[in-house]
Amino acid sequence: MLQKDIEEVLISEEQLQEKIKGLGEQISADYQDKFPLLVGVLKGAMPFMADLMKRIDAYLEIDFMDVTSYGNATVSSGEVKIVKDLNTSVEGRDIIIVEDIIDSGLTLSYLVDLFKYRKAKSIKIITLLDKPSGRKVELNADYVGFDVPDAFVVGYGLDYAERYRNLPYIGVLKKSVYSF
Ligand code: 5GP
Ligand code: MG
Ligand code: MG
Image 1 (cartoon, rainbow, N blue to C red):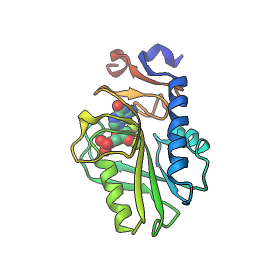
Image 2 (tube, rainbow, N blue to C red):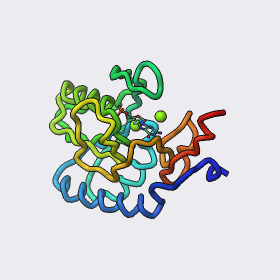
Image 3 (cartoon, rainbow, N blue to C red):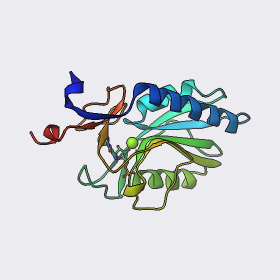
Image 4 (cartoon, protein in one colour):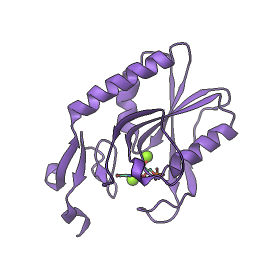
């Protein structure tokens, strides 16, 4: 049913799982003697967070934050509003921020500054997808799943008008979907 709206599958379910397994192994090695707090950024990072955490063989804790940027939906304004804050204190903690995609970098640079202000011990970023061409601020993830071209992608957590988050793969929407 949803498939009819998809122009092209960019990253298949199998490719996603294979990559996430590798990322989980890297994080397992890097955090063997630590107790990191994984901070998932809602709602987009939810499927990635769920699959990633199962591939990490180390003690860890999870929590979620929901943030939105002010202004219109397609162009990030840089002003970020906290919709749901963490329940966990980040002071003295090793934080791993889990994101679906980095575009301008504005959302994550806000979160990094916030966690520094809250005295996190260390802050790392893992993103499933990276769109380096969209960057407006200097910001790099420590762990990246896939680089994607400057196209609007959906699926595996990523939405268009709150739809398509439940697709099991990453795809590009047909033009006709935007113009109804
Ligand atoms: P930024 O890095 O610009 O602050 O924003 C990243 C957020 O914008 C992502 O977490 C995601 O919610 C949204 N976003 C950026 N690019 C895309 C895209 O290609 N598709 C979808 N569905 N969301 C995107
Ligand atoms: Mg996101
Ligand atoms: Mg969205």
